[in-house]
Each structure stands twice: as C-alpha cells, then as structure tokens.
Amino acid sequence: MQQQAYTIRDLYFWRITLSLALASFFIFAGLYAVQPLFPVFVKEFGIAVSASGLALSVTIIGLIAGLIVLGFWSDRSGRTVFIKLSLAGASIPFLIIPLSDSFLLLLILRLVQGFALAGLPAAALAYLSEEIDRRSVHVATALYISSNALGGMIGRVMTGYITDHFSWEIAFYVLAMIGLVILAAVMFMLPKSRFFEPSKLPFSSDLKGFSYHLKNPALLLIFGLGIVLQFSFTGIWTYLPFYLEAPPFSLSLEAVSYMFFAYGLGVIGSPLAGWVAGHFSLRTIRLIGVFVMVSGLLITLGSALWMIIVGLCVACLGFFTAHSLTASSVAEEVTHHKGSASSLYLVSYYIGVALGSSVLGPLWSNWGWKGLIVLLACVPAVYVVIIRLFRYRDKQQTAS
Image 1 (cartoon, rainbow, N blue to C red):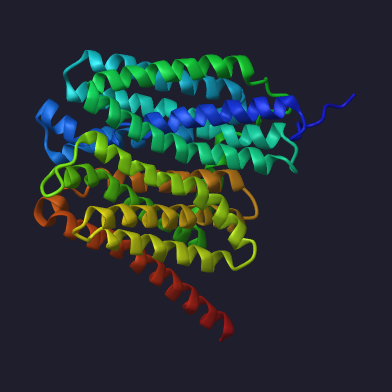
Image 2 (image 1 turned 45 degrees about the vertical axis):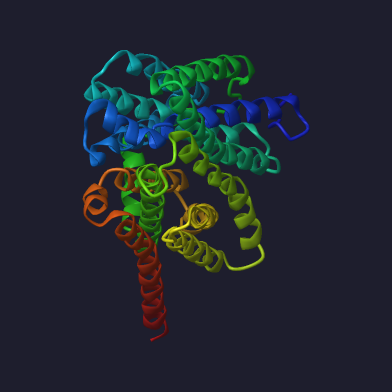
C-alpha cells in the first residue's frame, strides 16, 4: 500500500510541527540572544562598542556559509540528521563560552555556532514539503515561521533578564540546557523521512541554479530589498541597549530587554500580511509595510520613552509585513531552481543582519541616536523608490 503524506488530522503531523516549532524557537533564540548583551561585553572584555556587535555578525557569517553548504548536503544526505545536529551544535558552545575570559574565543565559538544553526533552516522547509500533504503544509509552515520570531524575541528578553539578575554566563548555561532538552524532545518526536529522495545531480547543477538567479535583475532587486530591510531593522536593535542604558533614560538591562517584546507583532504581522496580500496587490502591501517600518523608526526620535516603545512596535509590524511579502515575491519571480532562489534570499537577509550589527559603529560614535535613525529610515525608503523607478522604466521600454 502506497504511503500517504501526513495531513492535519494525523498525529504525526502534529509531532512534526511541534518538533520543528521547538527547534526553530531555540535556533533563533540562540542566534539573537547576544543582542541585548553588547553593553555588557563592552564592560566585561574592554572592547569598543563597534566590536561588541561582532558577537552577532560573526554568527551570521557562519550561518550564511552553513545555509549554502548544509543546504547542498541535506539534498543528498537527508533532512532529520541536519535538524538534530543543528540543535546539538547550537547548544554546546553555550556551555563552553562562559569558561573563557577571551572575547576572541567567544567570537570563534559563535562563528562555529552560526554554521551549526544553519542546519535547521537548510532542511526544515524541504522536510515539511516532502512529508506533509500540500493542503496542510501551509499550517505547519506558518507555525514554524512564527516560532522564528517568537524564539528571537524570548531569547533576547530572557538573556537580558537573567544577565541583569545574575550574569551573562548563567544566561548562556540556561540557553544550553533549554537546547539540550529540546534536542531530546526532537529525537523522540520527529519521525524519519519517508519521501526523501537523495539528489543525484552534481554540485555544479546547484551552482548553475545560483548563477541563473544572480543574472535576473528582478530577483537582484528583491535580494537587495531583503538586505536593506534587515540592515535597518538590525541596526536599531543593535544600538538600542546603548541608547536606553545611558542618560536621560538610564534603564537597567532587564528593562531594556523588555523592549524586545515588540517582536510579538512579528508573530501577528507575517500571517496578517499574507492574508491582506491575498485580497490586494502584494507589491502594494509590501510597499506599505516598508513605509510603516520607516515611520516607526522616525517615531523613536521622540524624547519620551513611550514614543520609543510605540516606534519600536510600529517598526516591527512594518518590518515583518515587508519581510514576509518580500520572501513571497521570490517564488513569484522564478519558474525553476526555486530552492536555490529561496536560499539566496535567506543569504541576502542575513547579510543585512551582519551589516546592521557591525558597520554602524562609526555613525553611532559621531552622530548618536538621531544620526543613526535618520540613516536607517532613509535607506529602505530610498531603495523602494529606486525599485519603483526601475520598474517604471522597464514598463516604458516595453510599451515603446
């Protein structure tokens, strides 16, 4: 009897969905957990403000490399093994990093951790598409993506809270324990692949897919939008702790970490954007999302703390709306090699994270919060105007 893909009515559907949601929660909690700790690292290791952001950006560099390498391997060696190894590889560095007082070793271990983190996103969506019926897979995918935002939010808040009450080392040990518990749960719950078929194509075929997409001007514009959106969004969160811990706010690290609850709007914003885009133009709603994000950034220029909080919430809603629809645009623009196109978008997205957490130090040092926000607001606004001008020119050329 031929095996059928799991539907929403099957127990194994929920075992798969819960396993990947838990794994996603931890992977993204571990990825972004260091973001509220940048001021702590500056004091602890005696490093510059701009250097503290390397704790995130080197992890992103490892993640980008892992997405490419492990994506190829998962097409040939299976899905579940990379999901489990990703959880193990993400947990162990949190046990080792607190044992050293070297910031260089922290960066090396975070680089390795970033490579390991990539195992989940490199395999999870492909695993879902293979094992779950197409009429039910959108539910599992939505829960998986929502867990990304939830994990990133809770990881930041929890790390900031524990560090303020105990130490950053204790926060890392707690993260390691959570990761190992989730790994044990996934080992027990996640079923083996039933429909995985190893790719017999040479690696050169995958590389051709990448090169094909990199010659597509429409896709390059989308990849560029992914970079600038995440550049601006990461930039504001990278320097927010430094801004709010200094006068006139003088907030504690715990209070600063609560600001990351604004990410909760991402859990709502992504599916809401998909629903609205189903009734209106995807490009129109994406454009609205970008300008909602820009408006939120500009609101944070207000001198009152409540204005900063409102601005962060508005920026989160706009960012996750624009990001989810930008990712959807990739599938609309390509007719084949869709997997490699999605991988390239993820790479561009994380390039934006790396840039937003590492290259803005001189601007912060010279111009402070106001100079930072003006730049971060202008970059995506100017970019979407450029996209509109390119598309208008193409229409004019087609018409003539």
